[in-house]
Every structure is written in structure tokens, then in C-alpha cells.
Image (cartoon, rainbow, N blue to C red):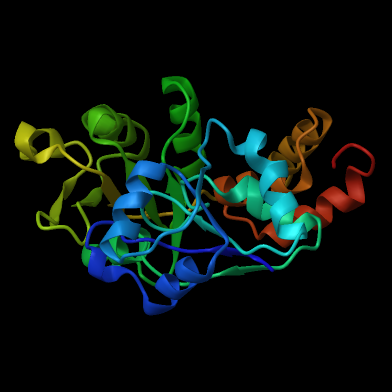
Length: 278
């Protein structure tokens, strides 16, 4: 039997799908980010199943246990505290391992913060770049934002309340003071969309509003960076290849930075960096 990724409500328990409930009832075991949190959901729907913790601190440790159960014919339901596992939540390591080993897997559609926030913002529904949480120290975050500076697509960030104002200021300083929408507490009682610019939110937000998880939707760059000479990005490709970067990473990063099709970059890598990338 398979691994089944089951989205769970991000606020309102009524957002749980009928199919998701059936899978949880039929599963042999439920792998969850926080067993106490998932137990509240299961108790609400009168579901009793064995639980095993599966979070960012034990993903590797639990991997073989869960793979063994799937190989032996058990159905493993994978959930996170809220939303869809693997999207800024634990789960991707297990999903990739299941795919690599050719084991059966399915993913259910369901609750997530990403799409409701984009629609509530009214910005760039046709084309967007999902970043999720900005990871690392300040300089690492700044470097990531520099890569996104000239991306014309709408940018979507997940943001924690305790870092909110500092990260908005950093984003405004690197990306420019762009229009943005903060969507907080999606599907909960105090859901709210707050409109402003990256550098004016500090004047808009009162302390009592900085609670819960936020999704920040930021308008894309107004203009692309003109590449007057192909040698600019080609030289950078060669440097990154020599540094051991993978073809996928090089193509993704430089495609965003220089607004060049990924396939064009990959083609250049295959023709000029054979043996230097993986």
C-alpha cells in the first residue's frame, strides 16, 4: 500500500476534505509533525489511529521505519500541523525517498495558505514565484533576495510573526519599496488582508496585529535586467559549474537573476561544462 500525503486544515477544521478523512480512517499509521496537534484533529472527527512523530528534527531518523512499513504493505498517511506536507513543512525527504525507490504514493489536494493568499491579494495570479520562509542568517536572506530582485513575477513569502518587521525591512531595502499584501490567519476567525508597501508596514502594523502566521505577497519587478552581452551570464555559469553547483541550481538561479529561459542555460551547461556538474 502507498504513502499518501494528506493536507490538513490551516485554521478552520471544516476545511478538511471528505477524502482526506477517509484516508486517515483507513491508514495503518499516521506520520505527523506534532502528535498532540494531530490528535486534536483526529479527536474532532472521532478517528483513532496509531501516530508516529515525523518533524524536521527526526526526518532522516524516521525515514527507514516509514519506508519499511510501506514496503510491507501498510498505508502510511503523512500530515503536517497545517496545510500540505512538503510545502515549507516536513515531508519532502520521505516523498523523494518513496519516489526514488519506486514505492506507491499519492498526494491529495486540499488546504494550503499559498493559493488563498495570492487570490486575496489580487496580485499576479497568472504567474508567481513561491519562496516560502527566508532561511538562514541575515546575509543569507539578503543574498536570496538579491537573486529575486529582478524577477518580474509576483513573489510569495511565508513569514513568522517574531521576524516579520525585520524581514519586511530587509525585503524593502533589497527589493525596493514595492506594493505588498500581508495575509494573516488564513481561514481563521481573525483572517485579515493588510495592504501597503514593504517599508510602510512598520507604520501600519500595531503590536496586536503581529500574531499568527503571515503570507506576504509582493509585486514583481517592473523591469527586467537587460543582458547586453551573453558573456555576463555565461561566465557566471562556468564559475558556478567549477564550484560544483548542480545543473538544476545553476539554471534556476541564473534564470531568475538574468531572466533567461532555464532550458537555454541548461543547454549551455551541457555543451560547455561536461564533467563539472552533477
